[in-house]
Amino acid sequence: MERLTRIACAMAIVIILIDKAALAIKCYECTVHPKRQQNGTTIERLCSKFEESEEFEVDCPYSTMCKKRLYRYQLINKVQESIERGCADQKNNSMNYVKNQWIKEVTVAEPYSEGCIRNNDDGSEYCHCRGDLCNSAPKIDSKTTLSNGVDTMGVLIVFNLVKYFRNMDYY
Image (tube, rainbow, N blue to C red; front, top):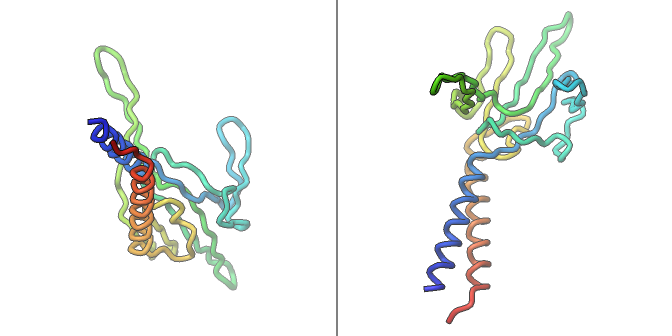
């Protein structure tokens, strides 16, 4: 009976970890100009100095996707390109009237599909992808990013289950 309890606990932990992994995503964030926060401080994660490092990693509690935007500016004799990276804009704030009071409700919408869309007016590209830190590449291949993330998650789960079962005492 104790063995069944341990197996049930292990499965519950795996389900919780998968659920948390599905809800929390990390993205690279950088901007063209320094970003001023509400408290008055300035964050300088400039895309001109971007590198795949922890300095540019951010948690995205209100996103299930990362974004990357390529801006193209037509100058007199050349086209200037700039890139921004960050969490996809998916947070919806609303107010609901419940039991004689207004309650703020935050939801995460799913308005984007994976891949890139080009704006024909100015040549800008808007890219969205799923998976931690998927917005680092110069070009986003959504099929590769998705399958690599699923493969990695599967390997981690199997590894941890094998490790757990090897440490169990059999009576």
